[in-house]
Image 1 (cartoon, helix red, strand yellow):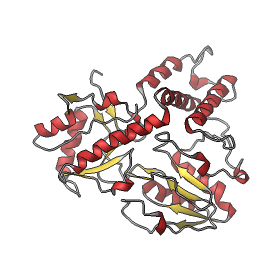
Image 2 (cartoon, helix red, strand yellow):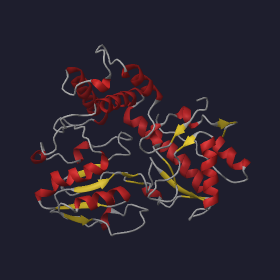
Image 3 (cartoon, rainbow, N blue to C red):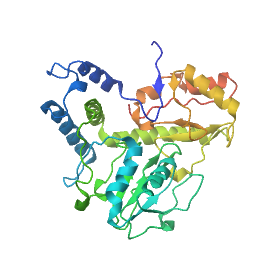
Image 4 (cartoon, rainbow, N blue to C red):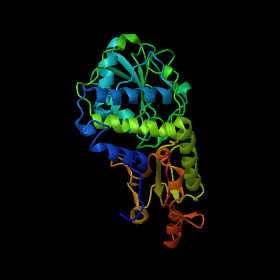
Length: 345
């Protein structure tokens, strides 16, 4: 393919090209084993080296305390909604859930199958903000407090770790993991829960290997502090364009709760104009900008994973200092801004 493309998918998401090339080299014959990394036994010394190396690098990147365990678990986010409740809910039979978007709502619904769920925030059909903590209805008897750090579909993100007044805290960081420093010591660590979630008997070796390569890449490129800087800089650029469009672009999320990772927006007004949005997506596709359409659960468009692209991609589609995104909008007599974005990859 001759055209450079940019993948805005939230998951599966873009990987650094440097990492992909490294994985490609090791895919057929890993190190000196003579076999593919996908063929390694999960009980082998070679795989243990990969697994332990990934854990060490993650501890370094996030400064994880020694009294915390790192577990690479199967099942995906939805599977772990159940795992969290099954392993932690039994202490008191009740749990607090901060529902701020689609994914935390699904997590709460899953947990309700196994015990009592207290909704810390009033129910709503529109997730546009994170209410001030002074309005939260926290239960001091809860087994744990759950929150989703970044709601990909709704574009809502916590910018601080919630204060749970001593109640164990569980965080879903699926979509903003390693995009900024995190004080891990504020998250659940009680010894009484250790061992309840066990290491699977067979892990996906290739996934852990690729993950370890991404960890190394992040370290080489400035660590989580640089990832945070990239995410803030690029998301602020997009929000600025939206705010200065005179209402042509619209982001419903309140400013103090907006995500640095996923920017939802409508085109042609607050409720969107279907014809303009279709034209926008078609134009973006022609320019090699993939997966800009929002999740099937919602109407709208998303710019996903903004911290995972490098600055060189941010300006890749620019001509004369003006992003081609912007140029295309002008050519079509519309104020389209195909935000040629890229976070830290």
